[in-house]
Length: 203
Image 1 (cartoon, rainbow, N blue to C red):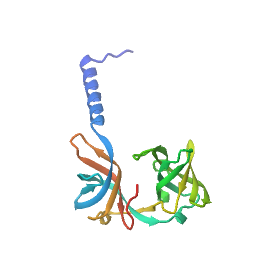
Image 2: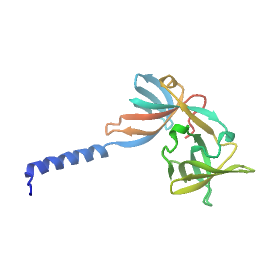
Image 3: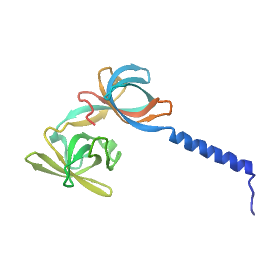
Image 4: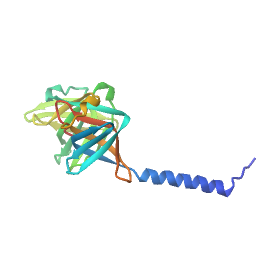
């Protein structure tokens, strides 16, 4: 049996799809780096690294991660880490920072991708090999579909994530938001933030 659908229903469906696409394009994601100036309920006033003051509204179920200081020795084989790094021109990378994920975040954002500094990348992966060198440790990071070799020096900032809460969101604390949603009206929303506890987010 063949059913026919009136033209007006097709038009309504098409209009709904068009509106959904417009809404999707009306939002973009941005990274936010800065210092908390004020906390007003769910709204954070942040002095951005670039200068302008930003207001970010946290989702009711926002994940808050405290950033704590760690060292090169805390990076163990088998750890799941993230690292922003710059190209050394020979197929290897030099870490700008390393953040160690807790076990319950293993697999978060796994892979290798461009980052927002010149000639830089972000790699979230498992440490499969760690070789001591004169200038630090050369680490092999493995992820599904590939691996990267990254040099971590004694000067590289190393931090870890710890479960956080609203009490960590204090004026004067550094904050990093990897993906704040920016609506067409310029408002920002966030579902996950990393905030200074005893170390500033180096990402």
